[in-house]
Length: 314
Image (spheres, rainbow, N blue to C red):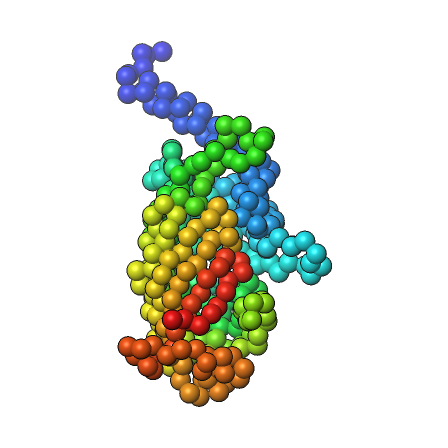
């Protein structure tokens, strides 16, 4: 047989390399520990007081995909009511370089949620909300409100790790949200509350209240965090029924629902809207007026996000 040329030899070597890589990827998909990934994700969610159940998990394009992911809040002690859950149709996970870790893309709330989670030292979280539709049934499931409107936003947080608490923790380090730094931005467009029930703090008790139609309009917010303390740089809302603004701080905790708010709120409600609110409208009328702008009322939000306090401002 005539001797092979150098080009032919390289073609053969390249073919073997491509075949080896292809077989590696194929068998990796077949033997990938999807069950271990499910358990890990469920454990991370549980640390934030959430219960996660996967309808199915398998190979995706350059990564892993999951379908029909159900997310619900954990049942509190002494509560018999089953937790309400929302369903995310699909989530795709793949390796990410910036930050070094895992990138994800989810179809939920009528839009898409994309981002990445990783980092060599601190945990880096990047999140983008793209045209989420508040009329999606998932929003009503979690909020209890029937709404129209769209949400866009972004979150960029770097979360240092600290030693885990507990006798069995040893040298294990966990992300410490109370020391996070970064920025959160939100923009709500044409937001309309058409009804529903909202649980709010009234006279020191969390009380469910049936809401009337509320045209909230446009709302834009920006919060900057440093060592877990978030400063509200912008919070402005303008609508046909209510105009409002807010300033203050939000101190993050290792669990979101234990984060503490210290926020001053200015709001102006139209007379017709105040009448529609009924008892709540009477409460708004009793709030003190802003000395610089008497058309606005003053209120203050304090306490944990899981159990906030809404009081008259000063």
